[in-house]
Amino acid sequence: MRKVMRIIGPILALSLVLWATPAGAATRAGTWRGRTSQDLRIRFIVGSSERIREVGVRIEYENDTCVRVVTWRFGLDVSVRDDGTFRLNLVDDRDDRNTARIRGEFVTRRRAEGTFRGTYSDGGPCNDLGAKGTWVAKRV
Image (tube, rainbow, N blue to C red; front, side, top):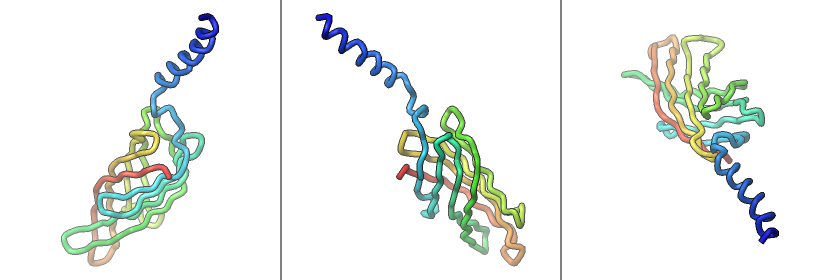
């Protein structure tokens, strides 16, 4: 009986620790890919230090008369919060009226989801365009 307890005790203790550890405490490091509600691509990379290092996303901006699809690619250094959420504020360095704000949450170890919104001004006949939607990504 003592031999059984010597084996079961440590296994039980380890099981309790793993069970009590929230899914968010697991590393999110890796490449994440998915689609937006506009059926366009989103991709981001999370480093081993739980920081988002890179993002690439295509967003369709529109108004009553025009539609523009813009590809955003940025190198970043944004922390993932303890609760598994993050915010990315992208601003065009040539025209600060062009923005994309991406909010997200790691809902499981392999799935993230969130929302985006932004503005775009081409300075031409389309003038001010807007975008908003949702996205879902999986770790690959």
